[in-house]
Length: 137
Ligand code: ATP
Ligand code: MG
Image (cartoon, rainbow, N blue to C red; front, side, top):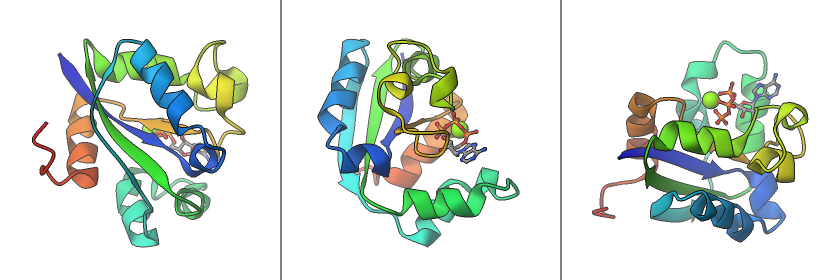
């Protein structure tokens, strides 16, 4: 059993897609272990995405991720990192498979509705960033 961190990004929260996306996640057999809505500061978003700091899209990404509320969730299941990334679909929704979250809901390469950790190691780091441990989950 494995865990991963899910974020529902501002483009999706603004369009009232939180329930629909969580429903797709539960429909895939992943269990929501912890859940909250929050709004990142510029500093928090910059820290969360620090691995991308040299990428040309970094500043736009920080501005986009702080443009509205997000939802953070800890997901658990068999091979949760890979299973959830498959459910998200390709980063660019134009390349995402039918039935994925991004194919269904994403607007474009930046406003692509969801984030998922890319490894169990990063899932642990990202989860510790978003959740305090008070959840006792
Ligand atoms: P995420 O990390 O959000 O789960 P990902 O792993 O598919 O998505 P990354 O390469 O880690 O994609 O990029 C992080 C995020 O930065 C993307 O989800 C997207 O919102 C944004 N992004 C990535 N590439 C570009 C780009 N070329 N132009 C604009 N935004 C981009
Ligand atoms: Mg990534």
